[in-house]
Image 1 (tube, rainbow, N blue to C red):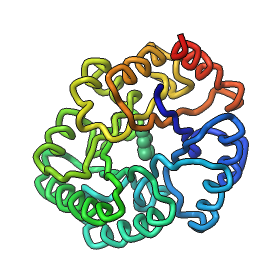
Image 2 (image 1 turned 90 degrees about the horizontal axis):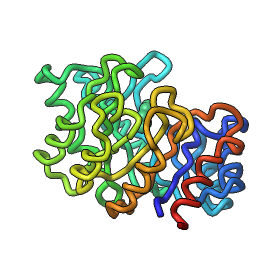
Image 3 (image 1 turned 120 degrees about the horizontal axis):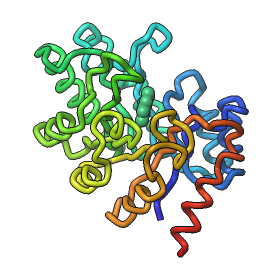
Image 4 (image 1 turned 180 degrees about the horizontal axis):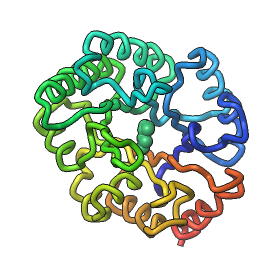
Length: 261
Ligand SMILES: O=C(O)C(=O)[C@H](O)CO
Ligand SMILES: [Mg+2]
């Protein structure tokens, strides 16, 4: 049975951020994830997790100035001096919130730029070293160019080769099925091949990023396949509900009834 984590940045937007924890628990979730906690005092988030008996699957390191279009700092040479401070902030939150994984976004850049690649490798090492004592994995996620034009990490094979080359025991792949399908397709075969390095999975229907099962792939079949492969991590539901979040959860009932067959 796959372990689902509601993504509280995208789901339950009927409520303010801190009230989404209770809404997710009321809807039957036992785990959540979100992109960025940094606008809220860490103790308030910890209290909502605790009060609602929720596990935290994942959140992201600070992305730079999101409203100015920044999408991470790790592969951005001009951000080298700011990067250690961003890791320190993430570790401050992580030491209290205790997520299973932290997602490190690369930011914009080109993989044929040696300075960007060098910054990325060095910054990954720094983030892995800082999170290892907490028992937390760093995950890196290839993101498709349609949603994030110019994003540095936009190739699954390149990401997998880098993880192998760097050899940090706590560096893993964040496999977002939505991005995978848009970038390369071949979801089932690549899930099986990459399973040993996958630290976190996310899902949304392609192409509109709505509820699983509402797009071009058999998302429920893919989740069953992932389970059969022996994946034991979380699956983050990183989708934008088409309407009311709870009404849209009928797809989850279909998954559960198939799992119980
Ligand atoms: O966009 C995604 O798929 C993500 O997982 C990032 O964390 C944020 O954009
Ligand atoms: Mg994702």
